Image 1 (tube, rainbow, N blue to C red):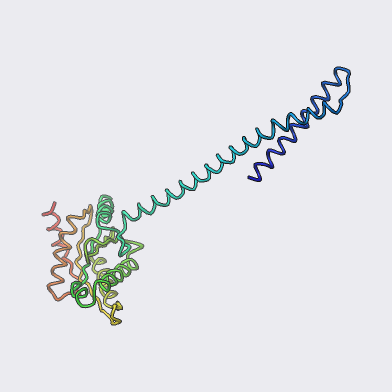
Image 2: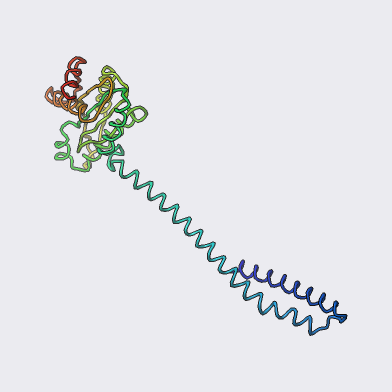
Length: 259
């Protein structure tokens, strides 16, 4: 409020000076001289009129400025909320990876560019056993730990997401089948070294089975997932903690059949 009163006082002072100057000039033009009463009235009128009017005007301007500031702050807050909601709509809360729908969407978009690539479908081995033995909190920690490894290995070059309860997907655009196998094996070994602290204070060891699929040109989730799923089941059938990938000729036949 002090800035408002200060501005009003300055405006009133300027009004008084202008009033005195006008009165003095007018009186001199009539051949008379400025007396005390004329000076008093020239001062009193602006004081009674200009100060209240200026105070009201500056106060309203101050309120409008404050309202603009509050509105800008609200816009910034809404923009932040929108960004957080947009991120939440894309990201799986537990793991920080893409959620299933976003992963599929981004894989299909990448696949339309025609560069091909490899899909890795990663499944945590005996995850039900981890939950039953150590509790669901430990199971959540296990999923987060696997997701961290995936992010570390593929964050810069692949699309990674959680596509099921304990199942993850990674798509590396333009990668050959041989590179897909190598990346899957690297991931398998990294997960094998994870030690998750249980709520009882013990250690839970983890492993994953990985199915790999490959396409040379245009890719889509459904086709790649069907092949990777077959390889994943094969890895589970071989005793888990395995990487399975089809040979290139088999992949070509399967892709043609799926088309």
